[in-house]
Length: 371
Ligand SMILES: *Cc1c(COP(=O)(O)O)cnc(C)c1O
Image 1 (cartoon, protein in one colour):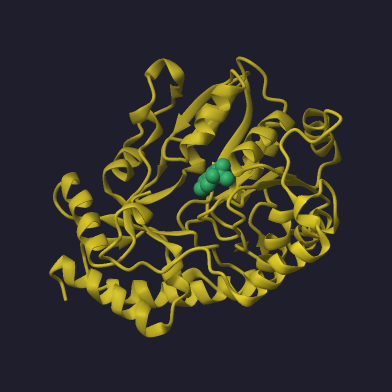
Image 2 (cartoon, helix red, strand yellow):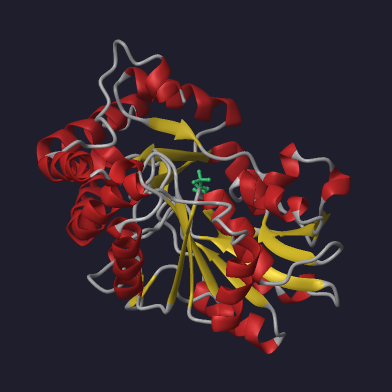
């Protein structure tokens, strides 16, 4: 929020990018009138594009990533008093979505220094009431989704793979969002594919897809995505593979400079990335290794003054919700550390020219006193 609020002095790379392809799409919307119609070719084209890009059968477009997760929970058959397992460090709306369905969030710890679920803690959290596992790929880190899926299958649970931060990612050759029974995407104003608002749920399971349809179709579509949104998303979907590769290169360059700063530990390991195993980089997480938690926030403020869009990460879920709202399984020690220490770099820098990325990393290194 402060990114747009108080950056009169600092210069941050803009987002979204209005390029010629977007301009042409906007002009075409004006020319054929589809900007104001309920139905037209653009949503159909987006559905087909996502089906192809993700190699899935069913794509349901909707109004946000948050509604996408809600619809996925409904498709999973989550009912009042059911339990849904999620990591104690996750997107707040995921936790609230579980409550919206009057179900119980069950929080387990993350991996050490990585903002994703520790799959080894799932089995201890499963009860007769468990219906689903909701896991997010966050800040450039892959959730251990293959392992989570196999544990879920052994216990007949449904996996919702939140890929809202991972559009364009590949996990051992498979698109992120397609390894869970259901996958979700966000097209919100800061996201990698953006239409200001919007989202999608994907699945290859016809029964799950049908439940989403039954819930949303009320003579009209209750959580719609418009033709206007779809038109600009179609353009970006075509650019996505190239941009993902470009961000991957820039992240490597950025983290390479910061490898000289012992106080800034990257949460992901870019040396494991390849053309078939690579994250969508919506945010890039660094873990503050300096002495006190306070210093993390001070460091982020200094970074912003130096025109690097670095911010504190999410608050851990168990820290911001009353204890009666959730059940915690085991210690949440690593999520607690992420609450105090995680920082996220916003993605627009990663599409900037090589020297600009290098200069930003060098300014950040300078702030640590390790250059
Ligand atoms: C952004 C985001 C969402 C929700 O998307 P909106 O379109 O903003 O509702 C859900 N999960 C994660 C991990 C996100 O980053």
